[in-house]
Length: 271
Length: 328
Ligand SMILES: Nc1ncnc2c1ncn2[C@@H]1O[C@H](COP(=O)(O)OP(=O)(O)OP(=O)(O)O)[C@@H](O)[C@H]1O
Ligand SMILES: [Mg+2]
Image 1 (cartoon, rainbow over the protein chains, first blue to last red):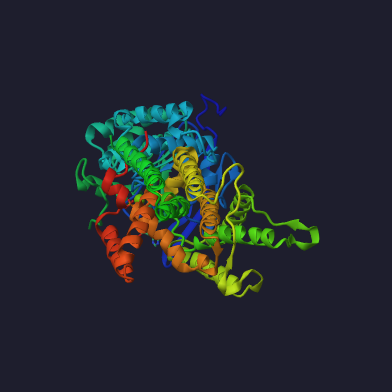
Image 2: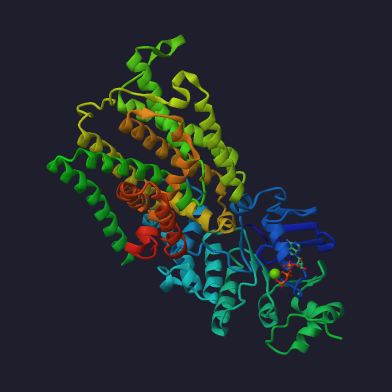
């Protein structure tokens, strides 16, 4: 909250220390340490299967690490449930949209607002008649440009619109930190630009740990970048540093360039 | 649009369920009144199950437990009242013939049972949940069979219908009116609950548990609450059913009873507020008319169920009102 505005290092909101997770012989997270500081967008990049989503799942509490710890605002939350972490201020979006598909767009957002408020055991007054809930939900939908689709069933949304709704639901939570797993995947070019400029401003409300494959977006947005390869963070630093890092070039970015501008850039093995 | 259409279908159902016994009253057809009363009471049992199964996605194959507890609450209280023996010797607490008191005991006892059963079985899901609830049902069934104090296997008869202040409950239409009013009141309450924050979150727990956790809500407490309320409603219906027949027996606890309650829900439309009303009405109509033609009428019921499951997931309400539309 009260980080030095002009200081170059702000207090970490989220800290990951020595996180390790194996699926049988596959080590999906190898002794990962990183932090997310107030006011920043920290991008997490890496080829397919590097372990990015697995890391987010451990931070969010869906997956228990074998070793290591997660701290939110200095408090260790490693053993907490997902719901408890969310209430403590972690909001995530899913790589594969995870929404209540039979509900309307508005209801999904209201569900987020309800979670943020925490008073779920209310049995009589309609949720959608609650001004405070609906206003909070509508504000989030407007922020991502879904306000006109509020009454639509979520199942009827396009893939890209579902991604936007994911972000809107996270917004209703007004969290201390955002975890976003490829929020721009599947968006149109204009939708992607719009979300980029939105995230650009959002970092001042709460920092964002952002997984993203689009390198242009990453270099445009990120204050810092961490590169994950085979479950290991091989480099963390500013965009300029990461661009110039030989290991990163070799492991990831070089192939990115080979794959062509704006291409999938999914880091297939190149000879 | 769809909302209004379903509201209209619901209103017609409710009106129809009232019109039939009114006509029967005029035409002096008491048996028809009894049929309508059965529909109202069994619909209430279904409304209870539908809250767990339809809204909460909790496929309970043990709701006969609550139906039976409601029934035995009535049976035991009235048994002591008619025999002038105290219910609990040590405190000389008497039985009672008062419906409101019986209902309160039935609701409380079945809610407690649902709370306990839910607390244990909601730690599982899917097939395991179905099996555990079924196992609880069987436990209660065999317990009542081997419990001689209240008739054991034979069950017990209550000679007079219980009392309701200011109403002659022996008049068939009066007892119908009581059952119908309770059904309508519960429908009103459950309808509100489904739109309230609790209902929204419960429905989200069914649709996508991961999403619910990711907005900071734990599904367990929601489900346990829903299961408890659901058991309480089905328990109330059991007490009424026992009063309708003036008879309770272990068969109220049988898995066939659980199955029938589930059939009301599926026939009428899983998760639709008035689904169990439509389902119970259809069931009783089939039983009455087809049952008169052949004692193997369950074959037709089976075929109908198959048709609903394969081609009309929304059940009768879905056919009449179209796909469910989210509430305003
Ligand atoms: N539950 C699981 N059980 C076994 N292996 C898993 C499990 N979850 C992930 N993995 C494996 O762990 C590795 C990391 O997967 P993860 O989804 O985290 O990669 P990612 O970096 O998010 O990739 P992408 O860019 O494709 O989203 C993969 O090899 C994956 O197959
Ligand atoms: Mg991933």
